[in-house]
Length: 277
Image (cartoon, rainbow, N blue to C red; front, side, top):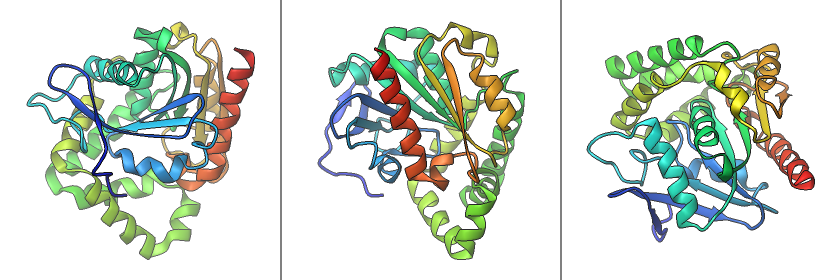
């Protein structure tokens, strides 16, 4: 979970430097953090994917080891950062691997810069087939818990909503406590407050998804509290080239429950897109 102290940062917008890590060779997979994740988190969930693919992970501006400007970025500025990072690394196109609220960022990059996006993976998306009202209610509740009770209380609030029931039983109390320490070490309260406030803004209509031509894979666990299997099917059908996969026993972030199974789904999706290219 430690950062690489010798990592080189990529320069993007004026005054912004992004911490990033790049592993492997092949088609580029760019991971997009939700506001609770930082770059080191992705290592265990992309280790198999980095065999045959180039996996690039980075800290969002305002989070982790990337620049923390005085004013927290807007969604449009986060989009600029994605394109700036690709430019800095001389990457023409990438597959965007997004999760939870970062699926909004993936959507916006694909809408504004379709030429830079080869495909999209939406894992436990915060996008709904009819809108995002439910997601906003959950995010508002998380923000209220964080602001009034702090990081440990937020973790206790998140835990049963993010993890699937099977994993919670398997981890037991030791797992709950161990993951809490990691959660508290990954972010600051200020970073999370800024991220959750941004999550309550932006486009909510599902109609814009019809404008995304990039192949899109929706992946959810069948124990996701925010989107049902039928909702995942309906969401995938909003995209001109969309499909979906349901991971048995997994929760809102399906890669947490079955990292190997998730990576296999992503690799298969990319191979199919590359074959058709």
